[in-house]
Length: 131
Image (tube, rainbow, N blue to C red):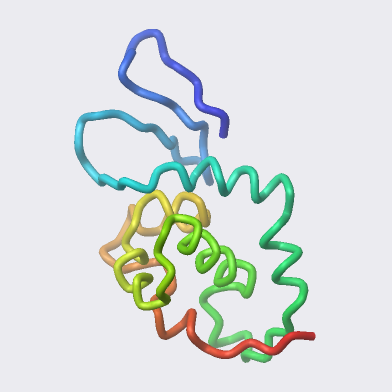
């Protein structure tokens, strides 16, 4: 997802595609976030596998039929929130609506519905056991 400049639209950055959807940045309004740098950080994380390796340190004792978010997604969301300066877990009730964070976590169903797609504070606050 390295940004590329388009000759036809000089004030727009294209970040490639995620699950068939074009990710662009421009200054025309729409869904707005001040935390767009997280998209680049998530790309680095995917290459270095930092949160993926961290997630391997935990055992997930949840019943799979009740799971909406993988252990890795929950850890990545929490780490990304801290990196963005949201140190309290209760900040995630607001962050669960953030477009840039959803793109970073590859949870793009928010475009098609009014539902939130990221975990809130209650989901992130549940206890996980180190393996």
